[in-house]
Image (cartoon, rainbow, N blue to C red; front, side, top):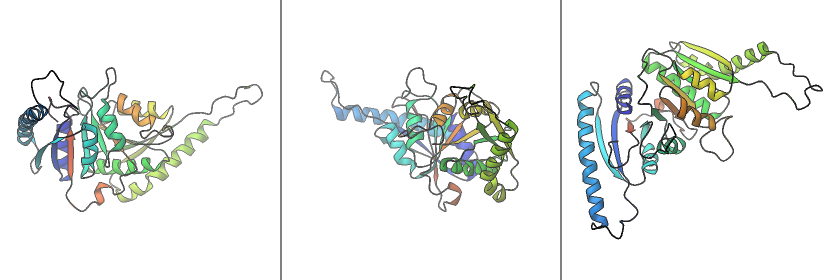
Length: 301
């Protein structure tokens, strides 16, 4: 599913698609093994070349017209190698699960690590939910710098797909004080809704002026941000979030909201980090969309 997503997005944007299979060699060969370390490495590399060759041939056969498909076998830590390669890509596309995943978590650990540290937007694609090409693009709107980059990315995707854009702004009422009889809670929800909608509209203003053909709507929800985005993802073809925001803990590279939607969203999730200093629509040279299914040596990437 991740490969198909990358091929279709490459066709929309005129980008080449680079398939990557990363061989993570064992730190050492067990003493009782009959094979030397170099023999093990050669075996893994040959196996990877064979598997990737088959996948590349299948991808080239089904790729939309005009999409160039290349493939590369690399050696090294999977997440670290993908993050390094992300500096030469417009986007990294990953499958949602793989052998790098922790048992019981919907999203593999490699996906989380790459979304945290990649130097370009990262899209994580589910395998168990069919695509919804007629659904809108959903973007989470908050005040962080990452969220502003996410809004720009979402507008670009909406233009490329001819899709509507839905901006989700969530708010939660303040907690009642401990002595609620002394400090009664008086909250005008209509006033809060209007204020939140105005904030969202301000963040969308530049995109609306630049891309007037995109149909934009704002949805304000009285709920936690992660829950609001998870609900919105059920009727979306792509959910776009910033890497950090109000839900991020100090010292945590990936905000808790981003982490929750990676695990629970019902559509592909694009995570856009603040380190993406040049949006991909302003990059003059032809760049690659890199796809990896988050599998280790025995599986195609």
